[in-house]
Length: 329
Ligand code: TYM
Image (cartoon, rainbow, N blue to C red; front, side):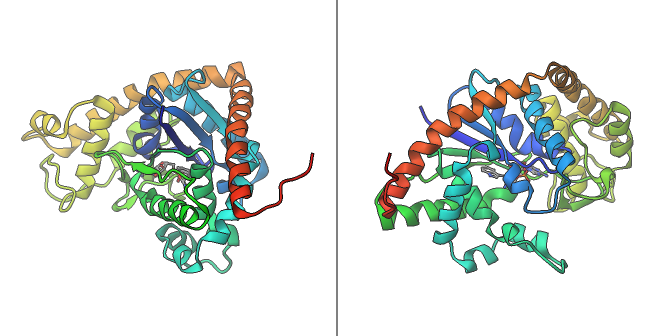
């Protein structure tokens, strides 16, 4: 059986971008793969986190995984920090990656731009991400479009290790959805929707109440013109709303175009809000039940135990190939 792995940072409220670009695919893939889905808390601390907020967000993301339909009987669900092998292989990866490669990462450029002081963790972040993936010899990594470059680097590092120390790592393939790989911000159709955007009106959080969703979508900026038509180049904002509609309704972009032919943006946006509200309602209900039951803790304990066993095997093999003297028992 092939292995699938991915992760989401507990750094704010997850958005429908995270859901459409990533989480929805995790749920589909768990059926056919040996599955590892993490809450990447070690990545979250590459920018300052308030301890109480980190704790809450970590538990919240794990509960959202379950609420979205990840099944602990099929997938290992765990916190990255509960499996210390990530940090150890992450260090090893920093010794294989070149400064120039890290400097070329667009996420690093975006996140460090205009800052007086940038943590070194933010810079070496992709080395830790490579370790996350390679520790389980993942074949497939479902992510949104913005992680493509990190995946390319992971593939290069796997190849580099194999070349220097002998074939060991699986070179992973990205799994990027055709529609929804890059959900755009509601206030600017040229920017990615992001949970770290200070303007909460720019994203829909998975846990936003129905009225907040309605308000945000009614205020979403739309391109000039009035036709509901999919044309991401020339009409990025309405095209983005159509992608969201498609993801939550199951209708294709052609079906949506036909449905709204000759209608104005206003009516489309109202109906879109109802589609999103109805789509998120069962997830929100399950989320609140899961948080109340406290079942997340048991799921994370079991997930970490399974993940540690797999990760330790890899780490022992990697260290042996690299020439580390085995610890004496
Ligand atoms: P993160 O936490 O920023 O985002 C989690 C996932 O959501 C996707 N995503 C989007 N997809 C579509 N439209 C959007 N607007 C949008 N915003 C976010 C991201 O592409 C991602 O798939 N580095 C990763 C976390 C990570 C990881 C890993 C992923 C750490 N280790 C190992 C895969 C494998 C990140 O920051 O994702």
